[in-house]
Length: 503
Image 1: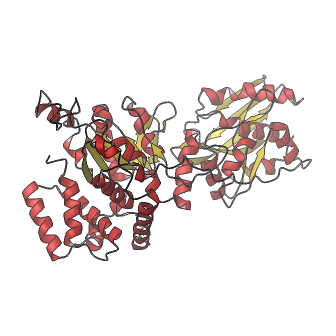
Image 2: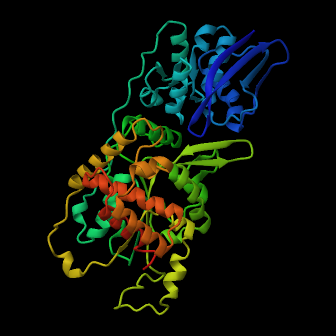
Image 3: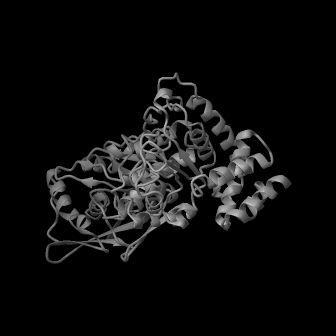
């Protein structure tokens, strides 16, 4: 007779239910695992055999066959150890079969029977809740999985505790959610002296999640400005926190099961590979653009990134998701991030500095920024020049606004957008509005429309550029508390659109 248990296989952030079937039949002694297992899954039989011996349980001299259904779905990872053990113990009548079928299990076994934490407990708990089953996992994963409501999370320290629970000797207590993790201390915007225009662009970008490009000489404060973006962003909503934590769970970035309300801030080095940025590698893991979901992706020295990596960003920026394609699977990860890019004006960095004349003006700048293709440049809503700060200004006391003051305005603008897009599935901020919805919410007044028409004709704005100006103008109006988009809002949006492109 076949005993059954359940686990999950991960396809991106989605956890698909897998039925673990175990049959113990007469025949030559053997232990086989079928159903497209990878090497880690196939080795589960050796870890399981040693764990059972440590508990004083000997496998019978029979043929043991474990099937992972659906059999055509690739199975990867060591988290299949525990569900295989549960199915085998049920087949040997060590634990009740109906109890084994009532939960979704995942966890890695050590040779002495201890349960080792694995990745993906949070999405696994989501899948268990949808199936109306309990989740059985290692103790170290319990705090993370318990954040999902609607399912009971049973966190066991070892395989012996699992047996005692299912046999009624010592039931496991439901796990409690972990603490809300504190993010790193935010750096204050008042530390930046001067650069008022760049600060304004930073505020607009945060309010509407508009992608931003800063161009300036080395040491002008581009990285310093970008590092202060998290301090003016509103905290993650509960839905956003769960979305982001599911990705971080698959990447092993959740600390002791704590879910953070702080928006992620990722800053990959320009030598990072395409798999590191977009996702891929062994198991098609999420890349930096997905780890920055609902947060900030800061790419310093933007033209220095490989051309192939930069061009790969174009589609995720538009769609908000990335598909990592493999021969036997397609992993889909969300990646709605705010891209903040920084670049020098040329290779030497001093194209516009009269004190350090560049010997290759203007070809040096054209060649260097030319590494950013036109279609990719077109996706930046805000382009701002960051001039050097005079050394005399550095001795002056700080006079700029603090991050808390700017964050309050950003929060009010985000709240207005949340109310505006209530009922529009998948749209949370102005940068995501398109089509008829964009024309409805961002239609400028007569003067603003006339200005935009003149700019589009003179500078040859593409259709994408035209719509992005409208989105930025709508965000500027939200920051001003205006119900309609007026000419000053359009004028400011246009100034940020053309500042670098036509410099």
